[in-house]
Amino acid sequence: MKKLFIRFTVTVFAMLIPAAAVCSDKVFVYNWTEYIPDAVLQQFTEETGIKVIYTTYESNEAMYAKLKLMDGTGYDVVFPSTYYVNKMAKEGLLQVVDHELIPNINGLDALLLDKDYDPDNTYSIPYMWGSTGIAVNSELIPIEKVTSWKDLWNEEYRGQLLLHDDLREVFHIALSIKGYSSNTRNPKEIEEAYLLLKELMPNVLLFNSDSPRMPYLAGEATIGMIWNGEAYMAQEENPAIAYVYPTEGANFWVDSFVIPKGAKNIENAHKFINFMLRPDIAQACVESVGYATPVLTALPLLDEQLRNNPILFPSRAAIEAGEFQTDVGEALPVYQKFWEKLRSGN
Image (cartoon, rainbow, N blue to C red; front, side):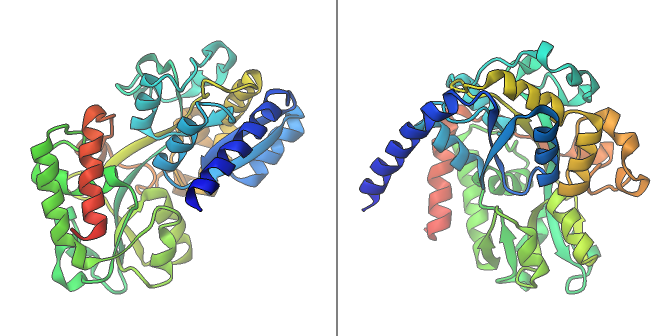
């Protein structure tokens, strides 16, 4: 049955790709869930006449697998995280971005440009950036008790913990506790991290990378991992959900616009990216999804309380203590092997 489904899926993709090729009034966007307000997409269509065909995914792995299967076709704009930009570029899945068609790039924070994962931003333009830290329900757990990733191993939290369904982010926790880089390619260090994470599993209630704020709001999880934007949105509903930058360092990431190699509506893709980098549009996105924008010209438009919120805009010390993810290359199968062992309880 699974093989039949795969053959059917490939056939459907093959049927859809030619349609995308002739849609000069459309742009096909593939993005994370809850990551662009509907009103922004509607405004783009109203201003340009270009209709946005919008599809979502829940993980970098799912996005990558689909684009790999389709050989980079079917979509015009995609939003991979930091290290996947490098991986996809190396594998020839991305087109070079034409900066001349994106004049709003001049309003971006230089600190988020020309990073190791994409020198000169040849293939990517930053959309949002953020961190992964610790969520704590301060009504149930005194916030002063949680300062470190190590605190997640406390036996008091047995069956209360949420982890992201993301192998690199989960391994970041143990690697940082061990004093190793979360981008290590050393199999011995990766195995040590796995053994430490194995000790954590009795505390784990669930894995969630869809809307991780929801189990905290529902009272299912009391402590664990969360993206800072999800923590910000959770606090709007329940101020008791606190966000902690762990002493060992948070995991920092940038989600970027890229254009897959098989994109057909390239001009529309550039128009969409440039539109999204407008200060007023970046402002709307920050206010809606709760993540930090690299568009410096948007910051004065934000409410002062939001602009000064340390969850979204961390201190320089918090940033320096953390680490941005990069591609781990040939070490990825090592991570995957231990991730599968961890998830299967071996």
